[in-house]
Structures are given as structure tokens and as C-alpha cells.
Length: 332
Ligand code: GZL
Image (cartoon, rainbow, N blue to C red; front, side, top):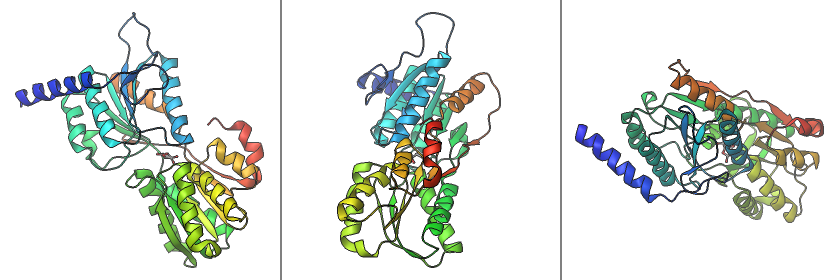
């Protein structure tokens, strides 16, 4: 066992050396260090954060919240952007182990494939915090999960869509990243509510747009090509894909939010701008401003305090009729 542990640390050290380092605010695609901590002074908290990518407005807001909060608290943040590739997140986590950080945070890009590396984190005696997205691992491999109830977000979206189409009609669905807890949960909640309450709403097409505007537009174009005259509404797992779909609907010659009703998730600024322009009907909030909660958990763990296993985010629903008065109050 001892040999194994030494070997895994040597391997992790080698990984750390093999990963290029970029520093500063952007994070780059490798392990970087922002200017969170100053050079001297007493031992400061050192946190490694394996972010999954920069695919959406929501993700950018989440990253900014993490970096700004670390800066404000004088925490040394080692940050990596995996560009939506799980292997890059795993490399970053191994690098954090080799650097001996105090706590590791990760937003798992997909739910599966984490058991081995999370065991390495545990063997290294480093607490692990799941942020935003969940991982399919046993609970003893992470200290805490903080993020949204994606299933509830899906339920809310179904109720909002039903109101817009009088509980009947054909809809298309733009799913998020395949295998991600956000997409899995939102689809689960949406279907559960349809089966429970809305038998006359039919999903005629459903496909992933990987949470990006470009892919959302591309998939919506395909939906319109095959079923354009038969679509009453769109459920999009995030605002970025919905904004891409809005462009596709307009280019097709229909009015978004009128001819085709649209409900999406996140409540980023772009969604409020689309609602004010009359092109989006509803967005279900999913709070990305997780920096303060995340570093509260990190500090509590290091101070030896008990932390709860699941820390849910508080979230609402925002509609077209109040978008103009809501927008000035939005923080992301
Ligand atoms: C949700 C988050 C999702 C957002 C998308 O917590 O994981 O990923 O809904 C983002 O915008 O890409």
C-alpha cells in the first residue's frame, strides 16, 4: 500500500510537471495560479479548482465568482479550465494532489468516470468539494456538494411551458451536455412533470446542443427543417442554446416566443435581454454565483468544522412581463 501511495504521488508529480502552467485571470487550458495570494505572510489557504470549461454565460459567471471570491479572501487559487474534456479535469486534479493543495473543488463535466481519481484525492488526504455538477461516486469520496436541484428546475420549466401552450402541443427539446448532471436532472424533472400533469404535450424531437449557442442554433435549424410547421414550443436546458435557437427560428421566418414559445434555464443576462426584446418567454434561474458558498465550505473544512453533504442553491423563475425591471438587479 505504501509503495502504491508513493508511486501515485510520483506519478502525480510527473503529471504536474508535464502540464504547462498559465497564470492570471484567464486560467487557460492548464493549471494556473491567479493572483489570489500575496507572496509572504502566514500560511494561507491553497485551493485547487478544476473548472469544466467556458461554454456558456453561466459558466463564465461561475468562474468569475470563484476567482473574485478567492481574491477577496486572500486565498491562493490554482485554477484550470478543462475546455469540457474530462481527461483535462482529471489531469488538473492529479496536479493539485502533487502540489499538495489544502482543498480541491471540481465541477464534473459528466457524472461518470471519477471513482479512480477521487480515490487518489482521498488517499492523499485532501478534502474534495463538488461544485455546480454532481458525480456518480460513493459519498465518502467527497466532503460536500453545492449546487442546484436540476430535477426541480426541469419540473418548473414544464409547468411554465404548459402555461404558455395551454397544456397541449408539440415541443422540441435542446438537451445540455450528454451525461452531465445538469442535463440528466433537467430532463428527468421535465419528463416527470409531463407524465404527471400534461398528457397532451408531446416531445417530438430531443437532441443535445452541448450547452453552447452555436450548437443550439445548429440543432434548432435541423428541428425546423424536419418539423418547422409542427413545433409549438421549445424547452432548452440553458439560455445559451435558447439564444442560438432564437436566431434559427428568426432565420426560418417565424417569431420566437410568439409562433414558438420558449422556456430555458439559467437566467443569465442574455436571457433577460431576449425577454425584453420579446424573443424568450421564461427562464428558470440556476445560480452560478457559487464562490462565496464554496470558500465558506473550504474554510470550514480546514477549520475542522462539520459541513453538510448537500448545500442547495436558492433559485426563482423569471418571465417576460417583469424582465425589464428585473435586469438591473441581476448580478450575472
Ligand atoms: C448548471 C450548469 C450548466 C448551465 C449551463 O449548474 O452546470 O452548465 O445550466 C452550463 O449554462 O453550461
